[in-house]
Structures are given as structure tokens and as C-alpha cells.
Length: 136
Image (tube, rainbow, N blue to C red):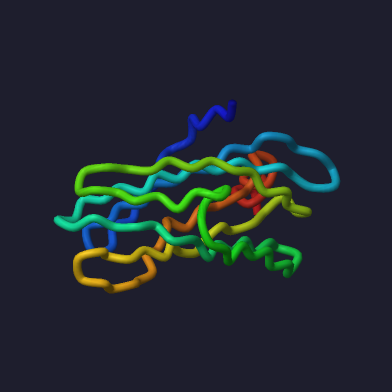
């Protein structure tokens, strides 16, 4: 079980709120294993379906990692107004400083409109990296 004790960040688009936070699972000289938590809340008046994601991680070495796929570990959640969906996963990063950003693709079932809902941008920086940034 991942311990998400860092501060949650939330971004709202068209009454769909996406809250997210990262956690450093394992740190090594070669890179880090990051965990992340996302909660997608349907605060709209219509049922939505969360079709998939387009998530990107860009690190300070110039690498770009992408996950542009349908579903969430095989699940395509349907959310009535007031319902939410939680998702956790991990991402190995070959760097000590990176940024996680992207969107979730949803469809408003009443309006038959598909749109991208932005997720909060997360900093994936180790305490060592943050300390060096403050000193420089």
C-alpha cells in the first residue's frame, strides 16, 4: 500500500475534479520509483464515462515517458453525478527530478461529447533534489 501523505492538488474542468498527489516509493542512485494517486470526481449533472488517459512524465535528462491508453488497469469507469473513481499506479524514473502532467478522456453520456480533462501537474523531485534547488 502506498502512503500518500504529500499535499493533494486538484484541477477542475467543466465540473469534473481531478485530485492527484505523488509519493516517492524507492530512491536509488540510478533513479526513483514514484507512486501516484488520482481521484476523478463527477460534479456535473450528467453521467460520464472515463475512457482513458494521456499522461506524460518529462525528466531533467530530456526523457519523455508517455501513457496514452484506454482504461485504468482494464477498467473504464462510469460515474453518476457525485460519484468518484480512485486510481493508483507507479512510474520508474531514471532521474531525480521530473514533471508529471496530462489528461483523462471522458465522455458526457447525455450530450455525447468527448473531452480531455486536465490533471494537476505534479513535481517528482526527491528531497535531495529540492534541497539542492534551494541552495543554488
